[in-house]
Image: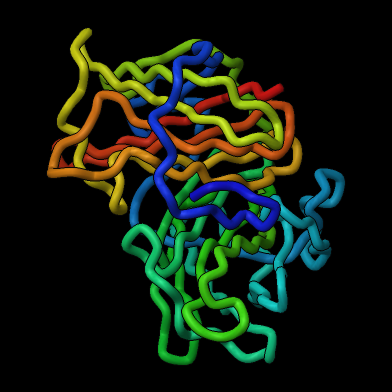
Length: 308
């Protein structure tokens, strides 16, 4: 997905990424990643998440019921008449948590017809306020428009959850929307410092290198190269109709950005180079989460990227 003022992305391929400066990145994989110890709760399973309302501002991020409009960064529970609603404001710590939510349209009724995007009708993300504990899941919708999501165990703190979808009918038909709310997980919350940027890292035995020159508010190509034992990886398996899925969150406010892959899937194996259309709207540190699959196993790497 590409970023725009509405977090809607043009769905067309971008030419292969040009050579750029190797970006300073820090990656941490889910599970056996080298720095996974600093990423509690990181999950890449097929489970969904929970949400509650809160301000998009860092100073009010832990206060349910304080959502404010923040155009272009996903930090609002409403946009163009569509609203993400949920009664939950807290979730239990340390165990799987179920979350129910609905998306209502301009008429105030639950939306039940969604377009398929990257094989799913709804992409759901959960990220803690310090950008740890990432989860990307796909909830299930009941006939009345109620979505049910299951999150893996969450650590105490303030979390923001995002629903990414495209209405298939109504005034917003064909419009990519990202709405969010916050939820509190009670308990002693320890803020984890964002890992410092680094040129590349090893993730589950893979070496990931990122090249490009993204500037705030401008569209730029980004290239990810994956090797293992010094050899190019060419057995990347299709995942969500692509060879890698990339999501970004901004340090300080957890603003959302979804980087659209521009390397087309052709056959069952891809790699080693993957291109993305990157349009990160603000300067500062962004935490990127790259998901790719080999041998039936999904790998998740966390990336700290300095923009501007």
